[in-house]
Length: 394
View 1 (cartoon, helix red, strand yellow):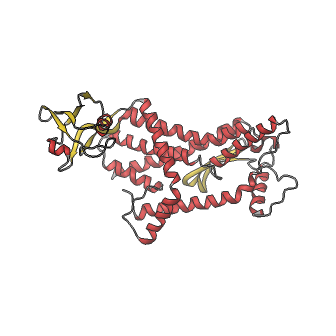
View 2 (cartoon, one colour):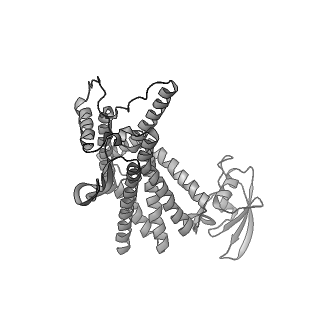
View 3 (cartoon, rainbow, N blue to C red):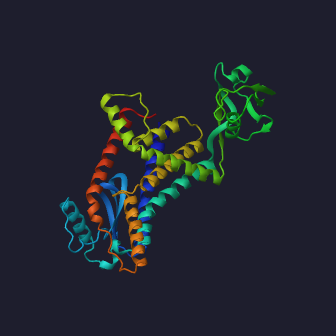
C-alpha cells in the first residue's frame, strides 16, 4: 500500500515538474526578448500563494493539472477600417484584454511586435521542453536503469504449433537461425518471418544443460511466418541511439493516436452511455496515467525497476504533450506557432516584392475557434476521466 502511495506521489510530482518546466520554456525566451511576462503560475483555479518579483507574479494554484505564463500583447490592436461581422463580442474582448495587459508597458515590447523567429521561439519553447524531458526520462529509464525487452529465451509455446511439434520447450534459448547467430529477439523473429522453406534453430537450455538443433516449417506467408513461440523478458540497458529510436517511435505512435482522437472520443462516450465494458480504449486522462503507474508498480519488485517504470510513464506523458502541442489550433501552442510561421512567410514575400512590412496578423479573430477548441478539450478531459474511473484500462 505504501509503495502504491509513493508511486502516485512521484507521478503527480513528475506531472507538476513537467508542467512547470514547459511554462519555463515559454517564460524564459519571452523575458529574454523583452516581452512583459506578468504571471508565471503552476496550476489553475484558486490561488494558493504567490510572490511578485519585478514585473512578474510567481505562484501556485489549487488545481495542479496545468499551468500558464501570462505574456502581454498577444493580440494587436484592431486594424483601421476592419469590421467584425461575426462573433464581435469575443473578438473585441480578446483585443481589450490584450490592450489592458499592456498598460504601463512600452507598446514596442508587446508580443505581437516580435519578429516571427522570436515568436516561434517563445511558443515552441514549452513544446520542445517536453520533447527534451521525454527523452531524458527515457534515457534514464532505459539506458541507465534498463528496459524490459524481449529475450531470446522462450517463455511460451503454443499447443500444436510448428514449435511444439518440433519439440521446442519453455526455457529453450535461441542461439542461431539457419546457422546464423542472433543477438536479440527481433533479429530471430525477422529471420523466421522472412524465411523460405524450413528453418533450422540452434537452441540452448541452461536449466537442462543441453543444446539441440531442430528443423521447423513455419506457418504463414513469407514476411509474416511464425512458429508459435513467445519471448520472455529481460532487463537490458539500451544504448543512446536505441533510446533516440524509442523516443521517435513513441512520438510517431502518439501522432497516430492524436489523429484518432475524434473517433476515440466518440467511441468512449458511446461506451459510457451504453455501459459497454468490452471495447478497447486507447485514450486516458491523468487518472488513467496514475492507474497504469500503480499497475506497473504492483507487478514490479525491484526498486530501480519501479523507478524506471515511473520515468518511462512520465517520458510518454511528455512526448504526448510535445506532439499534442504541435496541433496548429488555438489555444494550443501549435496555433500560435503556426501563426508565427505564416507571418514569417508573409513578411518574406512582401520583402521579396519590395513592399512595406505587413502588420501583425489579427489573431483575435481566431478567438471563436479557440473557444470552441477549449470547450472540446475540457469535454475530452471529463469524458476520459469518467471512463478511467468507471472502466479502468488496467
